[in-house]
Length: 390
Image (tube, rainbow, N blue to C red):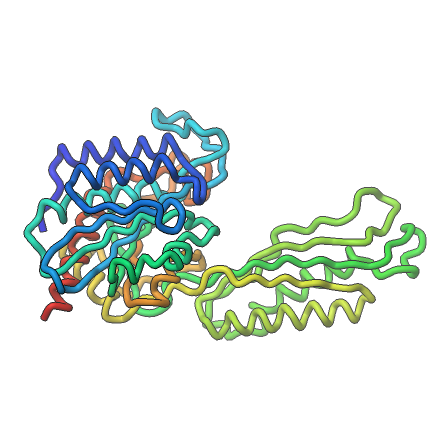
C-alpha cells in the first residue's frame, strides 16, 4: 500500500481544520457530508448520500465477486463551547469537534485516496461516513437504512484517537474494548408537605439521597470486582424553596460496563433498589432504564489482523495488541453485533493545557497522526480482502 505524499498530507490537514471550523451536531452534518461526497467524487469513486439521515458511502471497486470490507468514520460534533483562539476555532458558537471526529473523517478520506490510487484489489472497500455517533445512534440509523445489505459489507473496521496514548501508537484487543452505555432517569414522588411536618409525607429528597447511596454499592459490592463498571448519578434536582418538602425529585445518570452479563445485572439491581427505597421511604419511584449502546466487541481474528497491520504501518513497538478496555462507549458496537470487525485506538499524544482530553473544551485532534491513521485504514481493508480471498 502506498503512503501519502507531503502534498496530500498538507491538503488533508486543511480539510481537517475546515471541518473543525464548521462543526455540526448529530444528524445535522449537511456541510460535512457534502464535503465528504465531493472529495470522494473527485477521487472517481461511487458515492451514495443520505443513508441513515446524513450518512455518506463511497465505494472503491476491485474484483467483482471478491470480499467486501467496510471502513467507518463518524462525522458529528458536540454541544461544547470551544476554548482558546486557534486559527481554525469553531465558527459555530456552542458546537465543537471535541472528540476528534473531524480527524476521523479526514483519516478515512486519506484512506480513500490511498485505495483509489493503489493497485486494484481482489475485492471492494466500502467507506462509511456515519452521522450521529455522540449518543444519537447514527450507526443503527445507517444499519436500519440497509447500509450493510445494500453494499454487501462482510467485515468492518474503525478507529478512534485517544489522548493520553503516545502519538501514533495503536491499541486493540480481542473481545470487549469499549463499554455498554445506558441511561437512568428516575422520578421520586410523594404528596409533599410543609417542612415543619415531615411525618405528613414521604420525603423525596431523603429517599433520593438514599437511592444515590444504594446505587453506589452496585459496583463496589454487587458486581464481580474484575469487571470494570460504573454507575454514576450525574443530576439530582428537587425543590424550589426552603420551607416546602417537594412532591418530586429527579435523578439522572449513566451505567457502563465491559460485560454483557454485568450489564443485565446492573439493570436488575437498579430496578430492585428503586423498589426497595420506595417501600422503605413511603414514596413512589418511577425508573426509566434505557439501553443505549452495547459493548464494542472485537472479533478475535479481526483484532489480530488489526494489530498485525498496525505493526506493519507504525512498527511493532508502537502497537499494544491487548490494550485494556475503557468505559467509553461507541455505536460502532452495532456494526460489530451484525458482522465481524475490529475497532482500534490511535494515540493522539499527551494531554496538555493546549490539547485536552476528549469531550473537553480544550481538546484538539493531532494533525500529525492523519497519515498513519489513513495508512492503517487502507492497509487493514486490503489485508482483510487478501485474507478472505485465500
